[in-house]
Image (cartoon, rainbow, N blue to C red; front, side):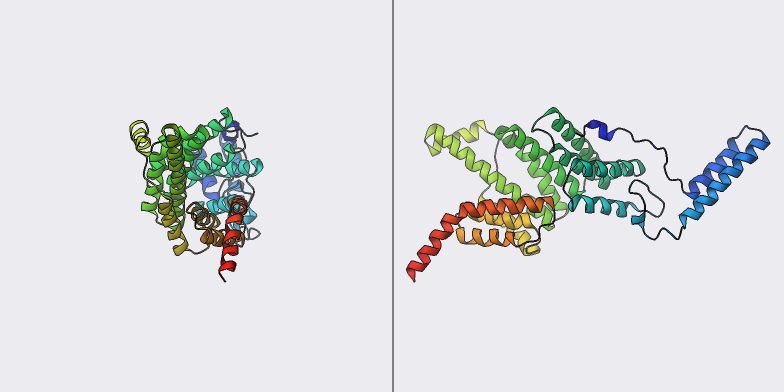
Length: 342
């Protein structure tokens, strides 16, 4: 199992030196050296050979693409954008095993040394530690430690650039995960912080991802409100007293409905139809909550025919199948009724 040791300082031995770095080193050596002339000439010759070799390597015709280089080695021809794209490709198209996450952490740790306080690197470190936390028992010491690391990096990302949309996404995800692990009371108490970051993400980048995450959370809130109402009513058997208890003893919960959640999810569908497996599934799930079984079946069946690429896609496919099983008796009854009418 990976622990906090995975983020200890990596050795800098064997790091790649560019010709410019070695040239500077050579000049610095001449200016500071207190050795004899013969020693200076000998060491200068060695540095000269290294500089020549580095220049040769910088334009080595055998290196035809950046992908030929070892993932932990960076050169002047590498760009931060290329390396982050590499990280995203590995993350999106592979199972999040401990080995993969350790590899990603190695790459990102190296980038964090080269580009300190870079918000794009920092929020990706948050993502890795969050995924790593899933490998531990819920609310265990190790999982809490991973969340602590993740919070530290995402806070640093937001301090560096408060307008980073992905940093707000991951801050909200961390709050949600911790609240769910701690129970209903924690979910109620955390809703304001979660909503703030999701709404801020929509304000900064009103793309399909931001709208989908906000719609998904509105669906969670609607389910939480339904649970609170049910519990209060079971305790007092009165809707008026139930309302009094909610307003008096619970934090002010937003009056979120399934219709409101559906509205946000459908915005995504209008922007990019069938672009997000999870969003399509959530639309079907929300219609099921609203007892619109025909449309629920329509969207859930559409989810089954979408491409499955990432780990999340596989999870969404599994949930869509389970929801269709729940829906089967209702859709069967509708079909029977329609046949009878004919």
